[in-house]
Image (tube, rainbow, N blue to C red):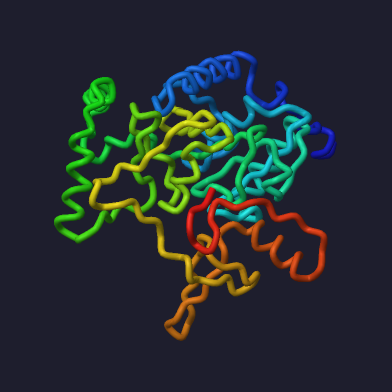
Length: 304
């Protein structure tokens, strides 16, 4: 008797791994989230073959949306070749038959952790953001029952006070990733731990965005052409990270969000966070027929 005789080829229990009941519930909650932009919808987060906190919420939304005609792109901190991104992308393809891609323009579903691609997404694309903490009020109100009542009353005074205190103490708003934003003039959301650089990309975007937290069992959505406005004071305009003058050491692109790489000598070099944009720029410089789509930022200034 051999080990091979005791095993059989792995096969998903149902199409897209999740059972029909789980998908049905998620679709209902996703439709509700679209109907009330920015409002958190609870759902029964299922077990998937990865640890909580590593993208289970985004994965469940993607598995609910995907079909055999889908083209899936998964990025982690802007990179397509990260271990987590590659594992999720291959798993989705394996259980659904969907094609894989690194190209933002060629994808129908883009699942991301901590970044929004630099190329502008279209109406026929869906962005799925993995969210560790969907509650913007947790830092000012740890009691979830009271926080829900505050959302119902649109009572965001404590959140405004936190931003004001940062200005008084530090001279500027120190909030970096997960900057709170008002959606459709009603609900405040925390737009995943994306940098401030990416928050304007959600405002009046052509694509549909889902933000899902598997560990917290919450999801919310930003429908196409919906207002997403960062919380700012009239005399303190919203500011993104100052990366306009930084140049990628590999691709030579300039004016995009960069990753800082400290060097042994004490200095730093920079690489463009959106790895696929950098690859396209290198290929184009080498004479390849590569298409780079229109980008949200030009020369470090938001222009979409």
